[in-house]
Amino acid sequence: MPNISSRALQMPASPIRKLVPFATAAKERGTYVYHLNIGQPDIPSIPSALQALRDFNLPVLEYSMSEGMPQYRAALTKYYHSLGITDVGPDHFIVTNGGSEALSFAIGVLCDQDDEILTPDPFYANYNGFAAAYGVKINAVSSYLEDAFALPGIQEIRDSITPKTKAILICNPGNPTGYVYTREELQALANLAIEKNIAIISDEVYREYVYDGASHTSMLSFTGLDEHVIVIDSESKRYSLCGARVGFLVSRSASYLSAAMKFAQARLSPVVLGQMIATKAHENDGEYLRNVREEYQKRRNVLVNALNAIPGVICPTPKGAFYCTVQLPVEDSEDFSIFLLNEFSYEGETVMLAPAGGFYNDPEKGKHQVRIAYVLEEKALLRSAELLALALQQYKNKNAK
Image (cartoon, rainbow, N blue to C red; front, side, top):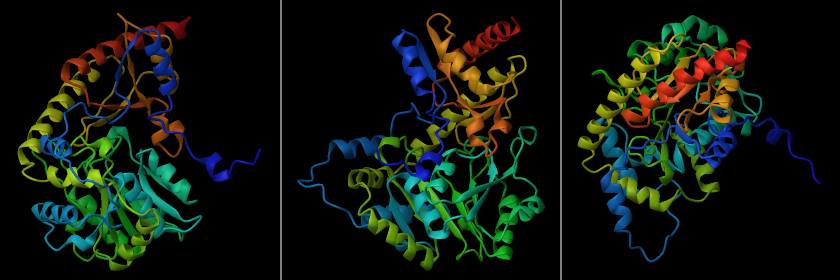
């Protein structure tokens, strides 16, 4: 048979989904699995989007414009104006099939083969996949659980920039850590981008979910960065519309947007139905977002308290998104995660976690950690913590033999 490309062979597996076969086998044995491995909210999608779906009556699902439907980009303009970013208009947005495609476009616009993107780790695991597809290297600067995954020192970041570095990639609020960057941290990155003449790709898909009365700062809120910033955004987590596959990139840079349009035209069109329901989602969404934010904050508090009550478990309190990176008293979190699905069951139930090794450039750094998504209701989170405590004890006893 023809050879598989080296690019395909080097594409990393998703740590979020790689244990799915073990979960499937557990379910086939009759075990109920609490899915804390993936950011799939159980909160119902925003009602206005569901109503738009029910009311859908176009006779033909035509292509949309490659940059996205005018009415959707108008809704995005209004939304960004509500964030205080009032100098962007419809022409600053390119609509994509989820935030993933927006990030892929951004990397394609900024990087050539063998170029580098600098990012703090741990980072969203699929950044590796997007970069690998273009033959681009991820160069990671470590953040640490002991510091709640704060941005590494700016001098360390500066020292990590090489002649091949084309962009700094951040996720704010962070996936997998839930860290929210301060304005001072972002200003330091802005200054560095100008100093080194590189871009900043800011993944802001979780911006609506920042807790404890804090607010989110967008990279678009800084002056002097018009030719340095691409923001990645998505409706998936904001409105519980993961399956709609609608996201976008936004930039003030005419050159970035012109280049990204070539990628947009090459794939023809973003999903029309997703754009239509997302347009409606942006209408009168304030109460929905407030209620969901409050719900996630409650879930965070319940889960973090329950996890930190387990002997040997360390869970910093995330400030945003709906993830936490947790240290477990195990030598190999992937082996333990497989044990949970393959061997452990209590009263017919178990838990699925995402081993954190895949969120680091060096998997060894995450060998004792897992990512947990608090996307289930409080009762399920408490039960999951109970199961985790029992499993840790059983795993310890097993390995002591």
